[in-house]
Length: 141
Image 1 (cartoon, rainbow, N blue to C red):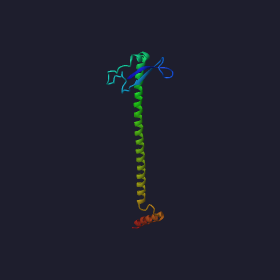
Image 2: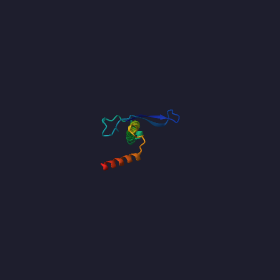
Image 3: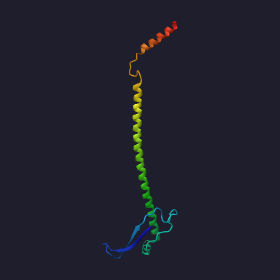
Image 4: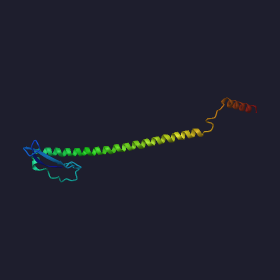
């Protein structure tokens, strides 16, 4: 979890009267007090000086902050992966859309151009007169 030591530094960085704790963070998958933590044995707590300087509540808060930051890091990583897969899906969707459009357009054009008499002129008045003449011929018989 947390390990560290106290160092005394002055205003210019040299040894002096001010004591500043140095804290090193060891990230874990679970919070040390989490019931899902497979390592129930807790790592050794920081030295007594840090415990005195920060207090047990502050150390628990630091452990909780470590857990939250690790969770946010994992969440950001999974969000990046989701966004990458969404982009891949978008690209594949576009390719399939263009393919569908091309196949549909070519198929429709092929059917229209292969139909007989699509572009031929049809004299409808003559066809109607032929039908009338055929109907009169049947009546006469």
